[in-house]
Each structure stands twice: as C-alpha cells, then as structure tokens.
Amino acid sequence: MEDQPVYKWSSKNILVVEDDESSAYLLNEFLKNTGAKITYTTDGREAVEHVRHNPETDLILMDILLPEKDGLSATREIKSFARNVKVIAQTSYAFSVDAKEAEQAGCDAFLTKPLNMSLLLDKIDGYLS
Image (cartoon, rainbow, N blue to C red; front, side):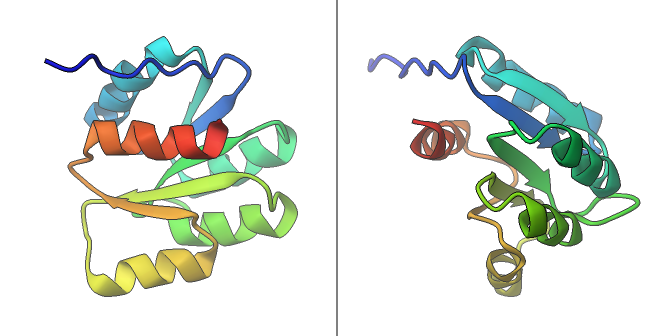
C-alpha cells in the first residue's frame, strides 16, 4: 500500500466557504493535519468580507450554491480586489455549463461533490507549493 503524501502548508491561509455542516466537517478532517490556518464562512457575503479584511488569504474552497451571495458572485467580487488568491469551486450540481461559468467568474479550478480528497489535496498543493 502506498503512503499518503504529507502536506505541509503551515504558512498558508485557507478559507473554506461551505454552508453544509457535514461537508465543512469532512473538509476540516482532511485539512487539519496540513498545518494551514483554516477559516470557515457559510455564505458568499461573509467570504468577500473575510478576504477583504484578511488579504493574506492564499486559497479559497468555494461552494457554488450558498445563501446570501452565491459562490460565483463572491468569486467575481473577490477576484476584483484580490487577484492572486486561488479559488477552487466545488458543487454537487455539476453540469458542463457550471465549469465554464466558474472559469469565467475567476475560479482557478472546479471540482464536483462528492469530492475526491486526494485530487483536492493535490490540487491545493499545486497552488500552495
């Protein structure tokens, strides 16, 4: 059996934008041993405010369907003032148009739920390393 890669992101700040409690819990379980500082918000409006007040945010895991402000609108707004932050869009409702819309909104990657955690961690590592 292959060893799982060890991710060390102790100097990195990740924002998880997820309104589903069980999804947020799963993401926390997979990210907690990476050393990254993980912050959570439950809607797009909070995400925009968080990044505005925390410009050191390196990466955002952005759910698409959110209360208050959807993930694509939040991404557009965030990218207007924080161009370097990487955004990985994630959604349970994946149609071919979603990936294109996510790209047009400024998302750097697009993943569908249920998330393949090794793919997600590799993708995050590619942006943070």
